[in-house]
Amino acid sequence: MKTHKNLILLIVTILSLSIVACKKKGCTDPSASNYNSTAKKDNGTCKYDTITEPTATLQRVFYGLDTRQHFDLYLPPGHNQNTKTILMIHGGAWVLGVNDDNSVQTFNGAVIDIVSGLLDEGYACAIMKYRLACYTTVNSNLTNNPNFYMDDMKEDIDLAINKLKSDATNLGISNNYFALIGESAGANIALLYGLNSTSDTDLKTIISMFAPTLMDEVQFKTNMTNAPYNNLPIINGVYIRKKANNCSLVTNQSVNFAWTLNSLCGITLTPSTTNPSYTNPLSPAYSGNIQRNLPVFLMHGSSDNLVPSSHADSMIVRLNSIYGTVNPSTNDFTGQHKMIKYQNCGHGWSGSCNKMIIKQDVIKWMNSHF
Image 1: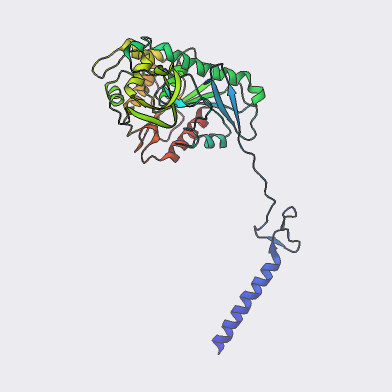
Image 2: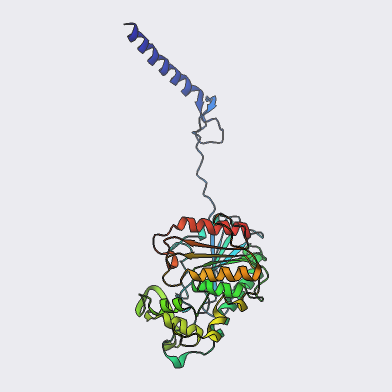
């Protein structure tokens, strides 16, 4: 009986404490929609009218007269004259891209969404289109000039930065802080532009994703020749600038990646022969193309079966040999030059790739060098 009475007393005590607590606790913030004037202690239940957070704005900006000379500019909330801009250069074997009117998606959703993370850090992101090389599979149509198309591509980066500078006040961004992120062919162009002595002096750093850096390297040429998607139609909104169509953009076309390389270089390349006078001008790891000591972060997939990851090795070795720096450890993002090979990642971050780590590393590098 005594035990029974004690149990009842315990239950009554708990209920009494609960009632007292309910009377004493609640939302004590008068600005909250559920403010409780009788509450003596705030219990964290305050509710407020929903406030819509400002979102990034998007503008299309033309930097030249060609229909491909424009970029989509994503501006972070609260952007101002101190906002730094990252120019992003898509890949596509120098001849492929989306249609003139469409937006490039490889940096902001289709493959790896790094734009949102950079916007959250307060950076502006300009995803640019550029003049593509004209694809051909006919020897007589080759230009015999390795700079014929590359000069236009590098000039387009320069023009885009100049446009961002000249319109900085109206756009609400800084006019002297710019960085480049390129993927594949776009990374090749970014390195060739950025490491040249004539690149814009307000360019602060480059991130290169799986860039071809040695155009005459045997394994690279072999991979391009034997690519499993050679001679298959390119679809899903991808266009090619094709000589057979007066160098206009067409879609649903068959592409051979060995010939994308030939079209750019202006000569027919083979794995068994070398043509340095044609390939050196287009190879960022060629010492003659390294004239400016910009901070460079080389990112490559360890399982890339198109551009061998050894291209990143060759590039970091050449940078370090010229400038006497060392490749920092994996967790150190403060060095002048850095390389990371990401396990299980193929070309274009395909495969069982940990994309979250890749995005985090991009942000770490930018926050350290930009």
